[in-house]
Image (cartoon, rainbow, N blue to C red; front, side, top):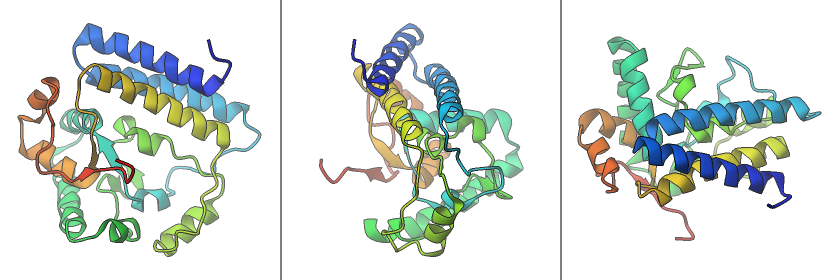
Length: 230
């Protein structure tokens, strides 16, 4: 067994998630369990750190950053919205996503990164799907608000650094990668999608979950995000 705590966390999460997925033949309930383990480990890591995050309710700067999701994350968000949010709120969220998607489809990758777009789930400076928010959002714990605010005010300035808590950041990466590797090895779609266009499609196409369960490409019209190295 490795002595690296982050590698150990990744391996443990991979094994537990793969076991859960195998038993349930789905990733949604296992993803919820993974989120719960993630939140506990990150909370402990923050407690053990001499540096604390500046993040708090009502701080919204990071909610204008570009966000990407995996198919299982969007499917869980869809389920959460259907069960927990009113029809009126769902409509408000989808209208924002539609406006964002129209802009995003006209952007280059560089323009998307350098443009502030309000997350469709940001309602009155609060996350409306906080319990079901994706790994990318759960992983963000800034030490200083100043960097977030500066990036928000100058989105095209990529020299602005956001200081994070190192151990918290490493655990976040390890745990999210552990689950994602388990989902991929179980044969599920492991592609990365733009949040706004995936959100619109998941409400328009009821066959997405069926394709996902069959190991097919879940989303047909959402923007697929491809790493530069691929």
